[in-house]
Length: 229
Ligand code: ADP
Ligand code: ADP
Image (cartoon, rainbow, N blue to C red):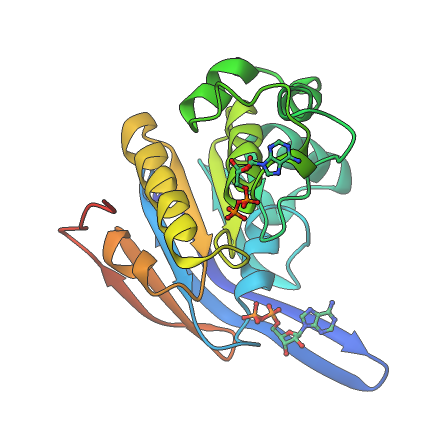
């Protein structure tokens, strides 16, 4: 069994009389330790896919499993624990707490975790060992995204999910964040899934899932991912 399995998954949103199949019979696998990139045009269903994988939303039909656990059968309570313990999230706009320092932001996130990693060590890992006591407003965009990555990693999640992690960054800063995510995956064996329009991610990914009209249109396995540096 693959680490992540999507089997004929659909997510239908109903708005009055209108039904929208945001995800429409999607199937794919992800192996443990892979860096996976999700690409596709706007409206293809990428964010919905990530939300289903992260337990932020539940499927209309089909089966989602992670590490042999039936995520698509989870109750609301089980989903809350799943999001808390098993999944790390990184968003386009960092979502840091403005009146907490970098260190406090990471500490806050791990308070409710089962097996957290050391917040200071995680901030050192992302190259911010000298920025522990800075507030988000005192950090550049790239640095804030590094704090967000440290915060997600400190939860020691089974799966790291990133939605447009370089979308708000300039090219060079985005490249550094990309390298950080690749190193995170390779050095810790953590499974990382990234939704992005940044085509630079495709060359470094182990697997690229092309999403179109709610389906996994094509999956490319990359046997020789290039180094991000
Ligand atoms: P992408 O991330 O690839 O741009 P999304 O997953 O955001 O695509 O959206 C896929 C489709 O589902 C779009 O047509 C979008 O309008 C629709 N959709 C997404 N979320 C909702 C929602 N909460 N309610 C209704 N329609 C939605
Ligand atoms: P970017 O080009 O990535 O947007 P900035 O020009 O905003 O970066 O910041 C450059 C450097 O100055 C960064 O290392 C950032 O942490 C630091 N910096 C920016 N604003 C402040 C501040 N108010 N207090 C302390 N350091 C700051």
